[in-house]
Image (cartoon, rainbow, N blue to C red; front, side, top):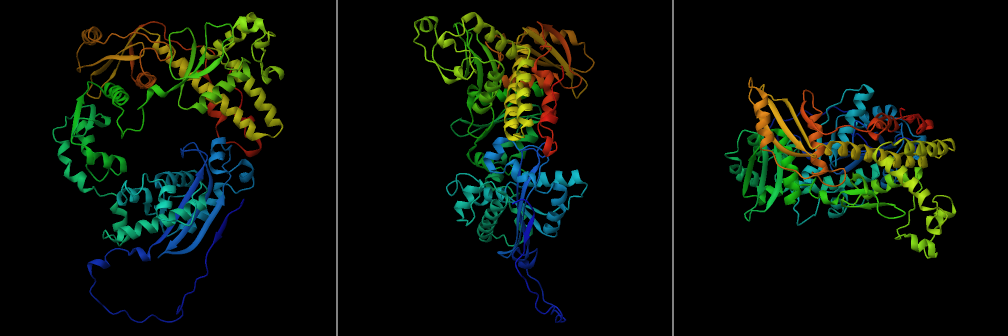
Length: 603
C-alpha cells in the first residue's frame, strides 16, 4: 500500500426532494438533552510514527474508520513518507520499511484529505494525546488551523469502566480480546483503528448501564472523580504550603507512591479531583490510608529525595526510577593479559573502565558494537591467560579468521600489541571519541554509497548509542570527581537557594533570606552537610539519576558556583561536543540522501 485510499459504503437519501412535514411541537424530556450517541459520527483514528515525540518524529501511516450508530460509513488509510529514516526498532514493531514509504505521499498531501474525511465528526483514539498531538503538530507545520475536534480517548473510558479483575491493563490488544474484536491490532494504523472501533462500541454498551447516553455525558464521564476519590479528600487536609515530597501509604504503612512538588498542598489535593484520570493512580487512592509529607528547603532537595525514596521503597505505583540497580554498564575489564568489553550491572573498584549507564541491553550492545568497529578487541567470553595461550589450549573463533580480531588466543597477537588496543579503547571511553566516530562514519558512507540505507541507519544507531553513553559517562565522571561543589541560584522570593554537592551526591541544601549576607549561610550549610565517600565508576558517590538531576539544576539560568574543590572539566574531544552531530544525524532529510546528509562531526 503506497497511496491513499478511502472507501465509503453506498448510502441513499430517501425523500430528499420532498418537503418535510411540519414538526409537531412537543415538550422534551431530560433524556432528550445533549446529542444521542446513536446520532454521533465518530472518526476512530490511529497513527504509526517514527518515534514517540511529535516534535522530533514523523507520521508513517494514518488509518481511520468513520462510524455512526454502529454502522461503518467509510475508511481512510494511507502510508506517509516521513521524510527521514525509519528507525530499525520501529520497522521491527510495525513492519513498515523504508521501501514501503518511498513512493507514499508526504504529509502535506495526506493531511487535507484526512481533515476533510473527519470534518464535523468526533475524533476517537486509543491514547488520544499521542495521536492528536501528532496531528496537531502536522497541522501547525503545514499552516492549517486545528479544527478543534471533540476528542474521546478510549483509554480514559476503559480505565473508568473496566476493573482489574476484567482486564489486567488497558492496552489496545488486551481490550480488543476482551470485547472479542474481529480486528487484530498489530501496530498497523487501519487494523488498530478497526480494533478501536470494536473497543469503543463495547465501552459505549457498558456505559449505557451507567446512564451515559449522550455525547456530552460520554466526554465528561472519564473526567469525573470516582466515589473513592471524593471520599478520601480528607487525606489532603493539613498538607503544608511548601516544597517537598509526599508518600501515599496503605493501612500497614507500605509506601504505595512517592511524588514531589513545589507546593505540597495543591499537588496532593489534585489527586482527589477530576483532573486525575490515571487508572493506576485512582486504584492507588483506593488503597491509600494516609499521605505523609516531607518538607524540603528547596525544590532541588525535593527532587533528589523523591529519587532516593523511590529507589529505597520501590512503590508499586511508581513507574520510573524504581530499580537503579538494574542499570547496565559497558565494562573494559582490567588485571588480565587480554581485557575485553562486557556488559555488567554494577561498577566495582577493580581498576576497570566503565561506560554508561544504559537503559537497556540493546543500547549497551549497540555501543559495544560501535567500539568494536573502531578497536577490534577480542569478543569471546573465555578466561584467556598467558598460560592457556602458550599451551595452545585457548579456543579460537571466526572473528580472528576474518580479521575482526587479532586472535591473541592463538598467539598471533602478543600481549604488548593487544595492550595498545586496550589503551585505545580506554581513551575512547574516557576521552577522545573521534576514532569510534571515524570508523563508524567510514562504514556508513560505504553502505550509503551502495544504497543500503537501512544498514547504514543501523550503523548510525550504534554510533549514536556509543556517543550518548560516552557523553553521559564523561559528564558524570567529571562531576563526581569533585570532592565538593557549592552552588547558589536565585529563589523566587528574592533570596538564594544553596546546594552542597560531594562526589556527585547532594549533601546539603539551604536558603538565604532576601537581603542577607550569603557567606554565613554558606558556611552553615557546608558545616552541616552529609559526609560522602566516593564510589567507583562514573557515578561516584550517588545514583546517576541524582547526579544528573543536580547537573540540570546547575545548568539553570542564574546559577552561580561558590566553591569547587577539584577539577570539573570534560575532555576536549569528548562525546559531549558531538551533540550537534547527533542532532544532524537524526534530523529529517530527503529519502535519497537519508544518511550522508547527517554530516561529519565537528573537529
